[in-house]
Every structure is written in structure tokens, then in C-alpha cells.
Image 1 (tube, one colour):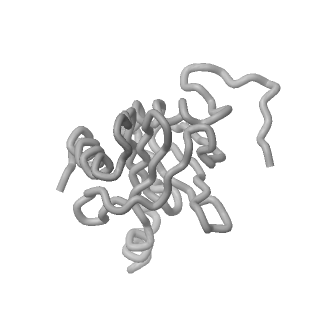
Image 2 (cartoon, one colour):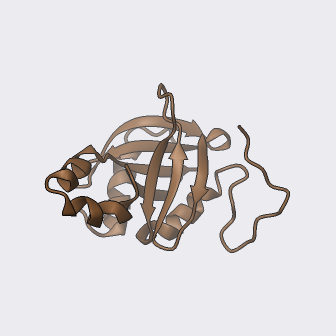
Image 3 (cartoon, helix red, strand yellow):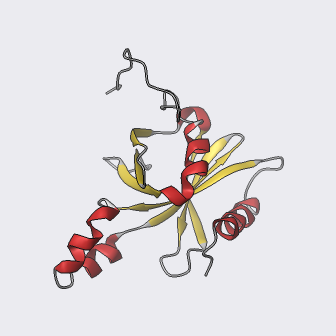
Length: 156
């Protein structure tokens, strides 16, 4: 089971290198999890079995930024090893919305292919540097360390 960020990234790159086109450069890799805010885990654990149910409904993913695209692949719940690729998006058309960069748990909403609504992905502070690199691929994303302009808007 990979615990260190560097080992997890190495495993993801090794897995994606097997299917990536020649010359693909891996820039950043971010571990995410679905579901409600992880801050609510303490509350869920107070209700018998609810914490366990929520834990088993969460899904884990790696978002990998390359020189041409953003690749989404699953992560094992038990070992955190990378799994199958579930989506590949061109860098210029990465369908994320509601980007919230917070102190500990950041979140984004990603529109998966074939799904009606975007799915919330939570990103822990441990992955902050990689998350900031990933945000460079998102058109009109807030750039960390810079105030957003007053003329910004959200496209519907």
C-alpha cells in the first residue's frame, strides 16, 4: 500500500505510461475522493453504521495532468494503487466547475462522461502543490495567490 505521495505518483505514472502515446509528459498527479465533505466524517461516525456506509460509497480517483490532456483513473479503496482510466480530457476542455481552494479540504466538480450531473471531488491539503499545477489546465480557474477580478462570472 502506497502511503507517500511520491510513491503514489510513481505508480500512477507507471500505469499510465503503458497506455500513453510516445512523448507524453506527466506534469502533476492529484489524489481525490468523492462524496460529501470529509469534514462531516466525525459527524457520520457518531451515528451507528452511517460512517461505514458513507465510507463505502466514496470513490477514489487520480487526476493526472499531462502536456496534452487530463487523465482520470480510479484508485483502489484498500491499497490506493491506480486502476483503470475512466476519462481523458483535452487540457483546453477539462470540464470542472465550482473550484473551491480551501485551507485543508479543497473541492472541484468534474463532469464525467455519460453522467447527468458533475461529481464533487475532494482534494486534501497534502496534494496542494499538485492541485495548483492542475488548476493551470483549467480555463478561467482562480490562480493561487492572486485575487480574482470583480468582473469574473460563472458560465451556465
